[in-house]
Amino acid sequence: MEGIPSKKQNPFLTGITLSLLNMFAIPFFCGIAVLLESFKLFGFDVFSVISFISGSVIGTYYILFLYGKFAKTIQKRTGKLTKDINLILSILTAFVALFSLIKLIYGSMT
Image 1 (cartoon, rainbow, N blue to C red):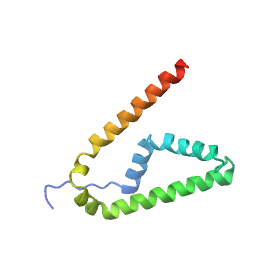
Image 2 (image 1 turned 45 degrees about the vertical axis):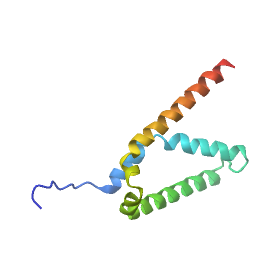
Image 3 (image 1 turned 90 degrees about the vertical axis):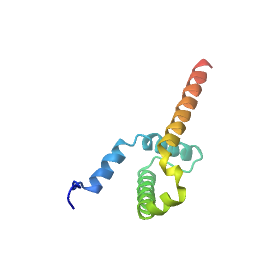
Image 4 (image 1 turned 60 degrees about the horizontal axis):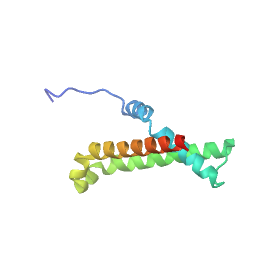
């Protein structure tokens, strides 16, 4: 096909790079581990940590695999939502940041 530049990127390396840039995963999994530990459902021994990591990796792979497989179907059914997802995610992130800031300010006052 003329006029269309050919991309010779490795999709696996692209995925690894994007996952390294994803900073939301770090506080999420730290928060989940602390929450589970507070209910005595998680320990910081080697077996528990490896099980948690394995479950996270398998679950993430499965969800991303399904998303890749059904991306066009999802996009057709969600319509306008997929076009505005960046705006929705930025508003959600701003809400979380504002909530965290308010909690930090009030927490330091008491």
